[in-house]
Length: 400
Image (cartoon, rainbow, N blue to C red):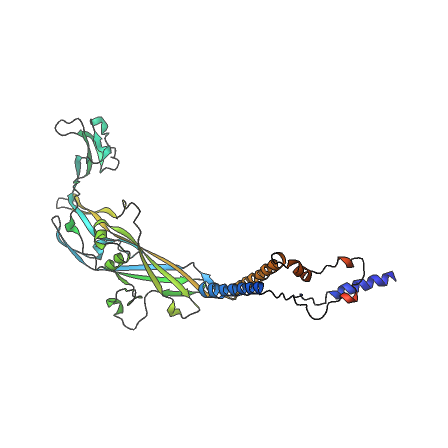
């Protein structure tokens, strides 16, 4: 008999796994808590639909590792007339450095020319501290002058018997670098053609910033305008500077550095023609003190005269350094992030239920009354085998 009873209990436990269990709901007629619960529900649903899905498009898989190539080409000519070189025509091969069409390049807008420099001995500039001397022993032969222009010859040159002077150096002669405003290029109408190819490898999507058109002369006559020609890739140099909020004439004289940011934000659930570039222009050589603004450097052109002697013309050039940067992000519908975000929203709604239960059970005046209906105390049945029939739950849920 004991064996049969044990088997019966085991069978009963096994069969109990097939029972369907459901939660017990209690309707608490509290308008304040009910209103709070609906507000929480609507807020979470509004956040999920409005912000997560419509604004952030979190139902999409994202791709930010954009692959990009930039090709540039400049056009425009300028004329200068200097005492050193006379009348001269400047073309892109003269004022674009380097001329290969890279994403980073320099445009000469102003220059100081020092012609006919030859190698020889001369006094170091007095503006160089390391070039000062009181005797020949301060000018060790063969040593270079720090931040100077050449190598010491071993002689200290002093004028009119002065106690100090400057070291003699072997160098390219002529240190007269006086700035002249006559050497300014009329560069405002120079044009920059920026061709940008991009690819999002995750979606195998490629595109360029050049608009497809049947007009083969479109690129020869259009200029970028944010309203009228937002997709023309040809930019006037003057317009680029003005869009940074700075003076073109000031940048022409002192030089500067400009960043052109091309941003691609592509929703691949829409037509591919709607994936278009946006351009931002920023001057990036500005700091709080404005002491280090501007951009310049020196370079030289070398020649030989009829006797075979080498000489050069040195240029200190000021201009605008262009740095083209490309950022991008693409998105396309994917079921995995969609399910994850919907699940997160539903979990938040469950948090609203917990909050309202907590308010009912711990903050309301009738909290003890709610607890009696929320929790059933079964301690008094611990020593019995069955719950009395008079305590069986009715089919209809009680209302509070």
